[in-house]
Amino acid sequence: MKSIEIGCRPNRRKVLTAALSIGVASMLPGFALAASDGDPAALAFDGDTILLARGGLFVSDDDGRTWTAAETPGNVLSLATHRDRPGRVVAGLAVGGVSTSEDGGASWRVSDAGLPDGEINAVAIASRNSDMIYASVRGDGLWKSEDAGATWSLAMDRPWLDDAEREPLALASVELETGMGGIWIYAGTEVGLARVPDCFCRWQDVQPGNAMDALVAGEAPPSEAPLPGGQPILSLASAPSAPEVMYAALRSGLWASQDGGVIWQKRASKAATAVAVHPRDETYIAALLGGILKFSRDGGATWIETGEL
Amino acid sequence: MPMNKGPKNRLAKGTVRRSVHLAALVSTLATTGVVVLAQSEPVDPRVEGLTFLGEPVLASEVTAGQQLYADNCASCHGANLEGQPDWRRRLDTGRMPAPPHDDTGHTWHHSDRMLFQITKGGVGAVVPGYESDMPAFGEDLTDAEIEAILVYIKSTWPERQREFQAEVSANDTGG
Image (cartoon, helix red, strand yellow):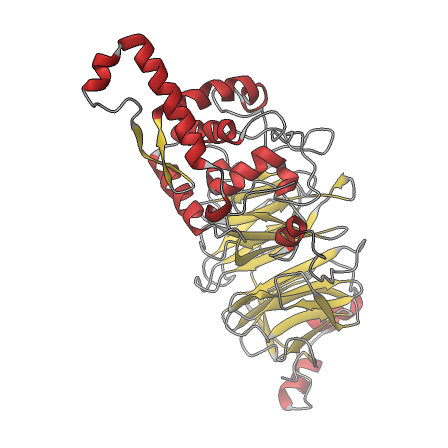
């Protein structure tokens, strides 16, 4: 592993870092992000450790002040971790299916038995079962593994939105009760948000819990403020410490919800391509905004660039 | 469409049960005579470990439900509750095939109340706007017949699925 400093303060470390070659500099997350904010990228918290996949895999144990280049299992398109399983990292790859690490990204094993070929757009680990992994295969559907990636089976076809099947670009296991003995899986697609109970009965829109009551009673439907339609949802996160708190990365910005995705508010206006939330603090988030990695300690009200926390 | 919201507004279960019970009683009297009745043995026993909306299920309901299922449901969901082939993949119409009702499907994740609502009012009765090939059976089947079909389906589940579904039903407050 190679340690790379990307701190912003004019200290000795930064001077030494600046003296590194241009070739090494191209590996720095900050450089890579600033250069191409449209490229695939993924963020995840593994405990207090932050993982960033973009042009490589980088790990920071100090709130983004310094970064280490980790072993990469391939071209990583998506990442997932679990609050109760430190060190377990699941990576969805452009080629080669899903890889899993049990040591925070130091080593990887391929986990693709039964998976069809195809880009793994999105991965998620079930909030209530760290051995249950979900993976979205581009052009195919949603797959699940009940044994931490050893074997896979088709869970369900892709969501149906605006008269077509849509690619899930982001997945989140959201620990909110479905009323069917399980919890929800949310998918950010090319055109909007959908969710399915983890029994996989049907994809459906995100609606207020009392929407059906209002319909039956003939009352006005509860208020909603959905994410802007027609925009790809590139990244999605539900806070393990408060599952109803969700974040979504769209080209129109970084959006937040306090009620499981019914009402959304914009928290940052620059194009957002990835977001992750700390496992124990629903207000601590990391996001790629305008191609730059930024952090917020207040749920997105204010932001600090990498290296200044 | 009027829908049942929970135990307080549930099916007219007393009427249902009385009808089934009476039919079974008449049948018994016709075939075996009054002497059998005098022996005070149950003519329509409860099905062990099976309830619907919190109340016991009678064997005659399951039997009636099996025939009703064959007549109304099996053409899509399969004679053996196996569902349509490749049921996790969409049809060309964008709609999902009929899922199995056995333990390989997801029916046992739904509460009694929800299963009744879906059968009577269609999937749109529980997921507004959802498009499905399954019709609403409220015009063709009575509440008692819908219940009989559902208890038949439930009677086929292994113990684990029955227990899971019973818990889901118990936790379903109708919200």
